[in-house]
Length: 530
Image 1: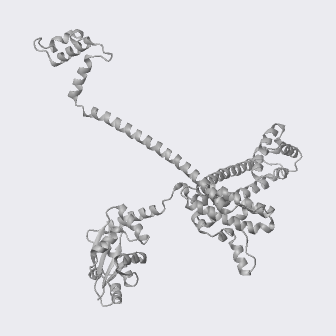
Image 2: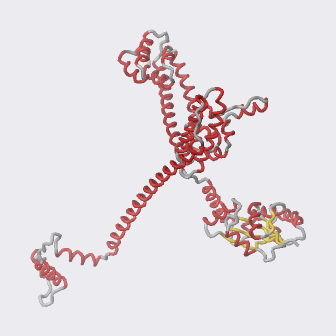
Image 3: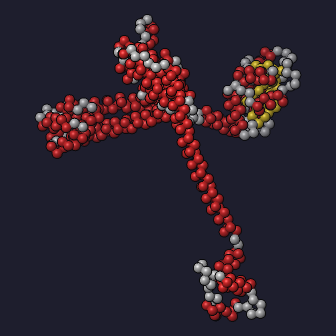
């Protein structure tokens, strides 16, 4: 006889179900399939043996993370150890995940099964779970699943906001798109305004400067010596500004209507704003690369480094690539074409845009690209897996590439990699310790400010509490005692002298002085002694 128990992990807790005994496990499959449509038949075949609800949402999240990683959590270990039969040789435990099944089998010495009839039983349990567990409704089960799902997803996507490389991928993609769009729009402005002032195209070659000049000049017939100084500021060259002025006087362009000129100026303004936004975006990309991958930025530049990260998908993926893959990253079409035609494979991909390959001789381009790819791989791994990334290693690696270039040209032997890395390690340790000191100092200041704020709140709360506790009778007594002596210490005049009409009404017999009069005499005696 086979005794099958099935473990089901739900958002509400762990459940252990006992399936009816059979001589062979294969005989259960048709019966389970038949009873799947009827909850009565299924509940008679599969019965709840034990249920352990999670203590809190945090406990549920910890157990879910442990199951996803194939680790046996303490709660699950205790639950199974308590509720499984003592004689476990004839017990078969069905689980949904092979990883957690292997962990249970190793820890509790229980035979685990993951396929076959276990899958069908788990499917039926998932369908009728709220009915099989007493006190659990379908609504509460769905709420538990939704809450745990949100918590689990939030924990998985929680990254350090300062080290997120997704922003770099989006920024470099937008930068490339802006370059294409600005180039297309600038050519449109040149063609459009060229009907009116064709000579300006040859004088001003830069797209951004041309759009600024087209917007400023407008109608070329209105261009005069008064605008020469402003044109010099735009083109940054007095000779070019003078050439524009001379060309406007003898231009072969056609006349233009005011409405056409307004549209050209409006479109030129749009292209100028796009170009200025591109400059700001490049500054943002530079600062982001210095935060996320400072060594890679120092070695190969911010734009090329960002393109490598974008093509790989993330900095972690780039760090996992070997140097041979980084070398031809971006030249996949050429690589597969060469493999198909049995031609020469490409020597470089995106790293071709680096200045090092352009500076190398034609015969050394392949060698320097291979060496540069090797250093890029080292830099990306340092940036990815270091706690506090610094540009120290990138600067040292860049110096090594410079030395290798000099070695190819002059034959001067470069330094050994071990020496360079030792120097970099020492400098990086100093830089990291300095950064940590600054962070600790900021944290201490933040804690002090928080402590002062809390103390101020407590003080204001203590001051407000006695005022709320005072009753009307206490307030009257306080007013009487404060009315006897003024703030500057001089005794006030008795009420009998100031209000003689009320003297008879409120005065008491002289033989039995009141408590207020006793207090007055006492305070008067103290003042005379002082």
